[in-house]
Length: 100
Image (cartoon, rainbow, N blue to C red; front, top):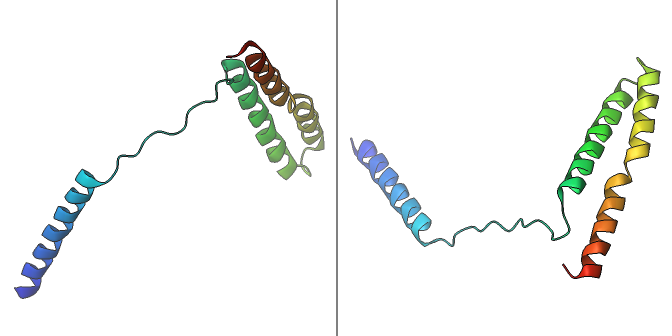
């Protein structure tokens, strides 16, 4: 009986302290603000590049089974991996030049 009362008191104390914490703790703010130069084109190219990189990693694991697919994935990634970087540079320059 004493253990049961002690467990209830402990649970009550825990709930009270959690409620006080939620009431008095500083609120979290969303600090992930997109950069001023980010746009849909950059996002699209970045996603496409990441998809090709994942395909390359998958093909590299299966390299012994299908060598041609691994080589094709490597070439596709090599062609596209600089696209997001070039687009970001151009957009930053454009935003800086026109004073966005």
